[in-house]
Length: 129
Image (cartoon, rainbow, N blue to C red; front, side, top):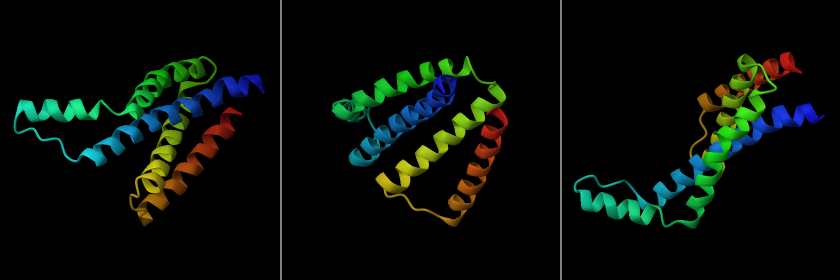
């Protein structure tokens, strides 16, 4: 059980942390609108307002922690299995954040892709267990 947590648990957390950071950044972009590149001054003002979000600090922390967790997991997993599962978890989390928290559309192609993703993760995980 300990080896399971130190491998797959870290893969899961790494993907979640990285996806959470992307969600927070995207949410902040949605709040502020498009970046205006027409002048350097407008760009700097945008960045100044962007970085004042307290939630952004949590995104920075999780974004920095994610690779460390991945490296710890990689110490116990085959790269050929661990990395595809990491990417799969990442895709699942991004899909969840996008659809349920950012109100992005769920299309038929996303559902089909999700089914294939879950099936591939099952077979990769089954191989490693």
